[in-house]
Length: 91
Image (cartoon, rainbow, N blue to C red; front, side, top):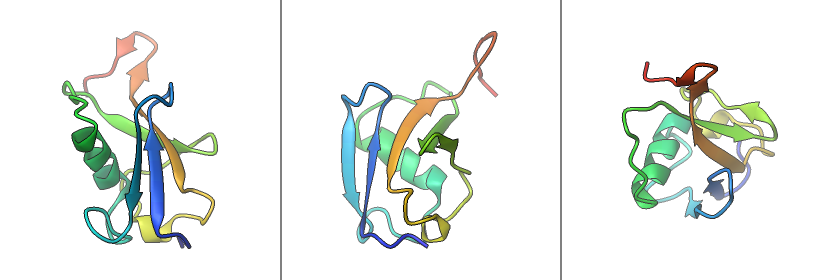
């Protein structure tokens, strides 16, 4: 269970960073996928029809996991679009 009241989401270059409290727009009952959508919206990053993923401590987070079910260490995420060896995945 997340033992913090906030999350930090950032892009791979760490130039676009969002610190969000888990009390208003995103709560512990939201999923990882919903938190990623919130990040994209707040940072004005178009999804361009791509699937976006979040990683924490080198591990991909399951988009369907609730924030309240994540380990306490998973409070800083890197968010990036899903890509395949042949290019960007549009599935």
